[in-house]
Length: 214
Ligand code: GLV
Ligand code: MN
Image (cartoon, rainbow, N blue to C red; front, side):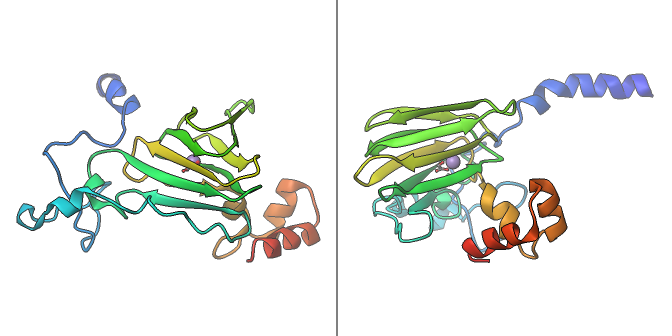
């Protein structure tokens, strides 16, 4: 029995290690957002209701509002905003950064990210699982890549606004933003966990929480 189990795991291993968004089995499957998703994909809208409009998306045309704590805005072009991406395993974002704005350290659990700077000067950095920090200041036309799951950020280090377009090998890459993941949850992570983790007293934790607006 154990031998059989080992054999099954051995045979499945290549498939498991290459698991990603599933390959499409049809030309298209525009998501019916009114239904609940089954696994990663939404069920398809009936083909008879699909029009040209389904395959075009204006959502990344406009500047995002950066009047917030971080001076940044990420506008998603993923399956939830552009349902024709359903089942295709790709998506894009627009990132706007005001001067000095920061797209705060975050990671994407389901995708690698590539990006191209459209406007401005931006410091792009990421950290490996071995805590090595890689970074570079980029200008228009320059590209970067962030391997799946690694913590990264973009910061405007120029005098003008920054625009970046980012692309993902998932229709819904997900984002774990470190600051809010730890300090702005519902309900809150118990204070003693945070004070012990950061080796500080609770006034510092409370200060961070109130700075983040929670
Ligand atoms: C940038 O890091 C993005 O997630 O769009
Ligand atoms: Mn990102």
